[in-house]
Image (cartoon, helix red, strand yellow):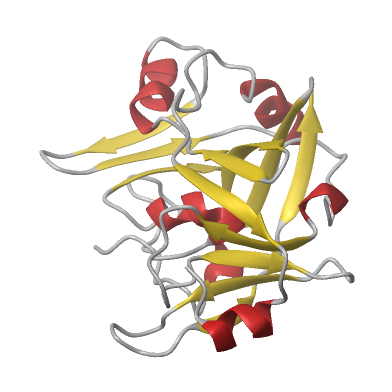
Amino acid sequence: MNRLTALGLIACLMWLAACSETRFESPPGQNIALCDTHLAGLWLAVDSKPGELDGFEIDAECHTRILTRTEAGGPVQAIQVPVNFVHQRGKHYVVVADEALKGLVELPPIHGVNPVPKRNFFIVRYEVHGDRLRLFNVDDRGAAHAILDGTLEGTISSTLDELHVYVRGSREQILLALDTPGLFERKASSVLRRRDVTLEEAMREKLP
């Protein structure tokens, strides 16, 4: 299964359709924001090649548009995706419902869970330092180990080359789960840079 090629802010969601994934039963907590004004603007991956435009834009109305290609070799498209933000103990998270990714990637049902949940969530941690945005995926193996040792509740579906983790819990339980040691990768999964142009200008000029 191919990974997403661009989800900018959800650049880490580039990895969500991969053979290794972690999903959550509930969004974390009750204090979920629709926008983080610190992220307003256009962000492009620092390793983007000219014309690739991997990244995202958050406009003045807090709409998030993800830059992606719906088919290999096709034109770059800006697809609006509803995302949410959670701030907990000085750390920051992007929360995306699986249903919000329709049109960007085809997600299979939750593995090993019956009945299949109607809705679940992906969570990515992020840090902003000046014009750099660093995104940290869930460490799928770390999440699996936390379930095995009883720190978290959930299910694990594993084969030779696939790992699917499902973390169960209420909103408050998932909020507490974010503090689980080793839940997120220590190294940034993606790094983006804020650009001083509009999305339309970047697409026209094919900026790297």
